[in-house]
Structure formats: structure tokens, C-alpha cells
Image (cartoon, rainbow, N blue to C red; front, side, top):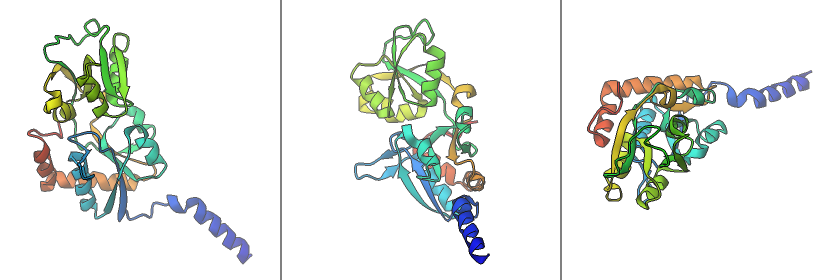
Amino acid sequence: MKKVISILTLLTALTFGPFVSADDWDKVRIGVEGAYPPFSSVTASGELQGFDIEIARALCDEIGAECTLVQQDWDGIIPALLARKYDAIIASMSITEERKKKVAFTNKYYSTPAKFAQAKGAGIEISAEGLKGKTVGVQRATTHDNFVTNTFGDSVDIRRYGSQDEAYLDAVAGRLDLLLADSVAMADGFLNTPDGAGWEFVGPGYSDPEFFGEGAGIAIRKKNQDLVDKFNAAIDAIRANGKYQEINDKYFDFDVYGE
């Protein structure tokens, strides 16, 4: 009988052990992209930097966790979370209904609109008629990709890229008529750089929740609601104690948190 009980105990531990929410989260692995300035990028010496990176570290300090940042290409960032490569994603991921089917989200930690950019003086009208025959570059599998596909897909030629930087390179090379991306990321990562000096914003800002969700949040496996709660409390704490504002002011001259 003891032998049977021991085997059952072992099987129970193997089956449920990794999933029991007894984790104090003293160690947390954070998935980041590293290719989305000013939110995340990699320096020449290989160090991660940016708003997302500093927010991640501030939140880990707040919850008292030792955090490891794990760099991951955008295309595989949710699958890698579900495969337990890391415990949370802090990578400017918009909180959308489609993504909520796969992962849980914290409350937002910032919100900024999307915009188109064109070569200066191109005079493109942002409408179904004005975009006919135009080529638009977007980062693949993003809210911007979904928006332009659903809103203007019958008018434009959409070119999808693995990273935003790849889209910028094709824009400079004259292979694109337009770019669509987060307005802050595109201003800092392209328009305000020497490579992007010949480009400008065109048309309105877009923040329709149907496509762009509720802002950028932290994605976490659904079974780890305790970690969601910890990060929500930490977001509130760093906004209250001034740490969020300190990081905000390092990268932006406006309130990136939004309304």
C-alpha cells in the first residue's frame, strides 16, 4: 500500500508540480524584443536599453524579484511565453481581444497612437481612394498589420517585415510609399534620425480599440494570475512613487501613459 501511495504522490507531483501557484516569484524571466526604439533596442556593446527595458527592471524591483531579460524576435514572442521560455512579456504589446484568447494581460503601462509616414512632399491622401496602388510597410503580426489589412487592404500593397527596422531600411531605399507604426516609436526610431530625415507623418493618429486594444500591457500565461496581480500592483506603485515619471521623462517630453 505504501508503495502505491508513493507512486501516486510522485505522479501527482509530476503532473501538477510546475503548475501549482505556490511560486513567490522571487525570480522572473521577462521576454523583450530589443528591436523597437525607443522602447527597446540593443547598444553596440550588446546591452538592452529603452523605455520597456527600464520599466521591466523598475517593476521587478517593486515586486522584489530577480529578473532575467530574454531577447526574442517578435514573431515568436507569444509562443515562447506559452512554451515557458520566460514568464512575462514586456515588449510594447497592445492588449487586444485576439491576444486575450491566448494570454492574460496586466493593466496598460502606456498608450500611444499609430500613424502613417510618407516621403516629404509626397502628398498622399490617407483614404481608400488615396491609397490605391500605394505600398505600405508594417511589422508583421502587429496591431498595425491588422489595422491596415482590415481597413485599407483592398487598396494598398502591404509589405510585412520581421522588425520595424527592416521596414525603415526599405523606406529609405525607395521601396515603400508609406510606413505605418506607433507614432512615438517611428518618430524616435526613424523620423528623427538622419536616415529618416526625408520622411514625415501624414494623416491622423489611430487608436481604435477594435484594432489597437487598450494600450500596451504585460502578457502573462493565463494560469499565472498571481503574477498578473503582482505586476498590476507594481505598475500602480511606480506611477505613485515617481519612478514611472522618471523613466518617462528620460525618453519622452510628454506623458506616454496616455489618458
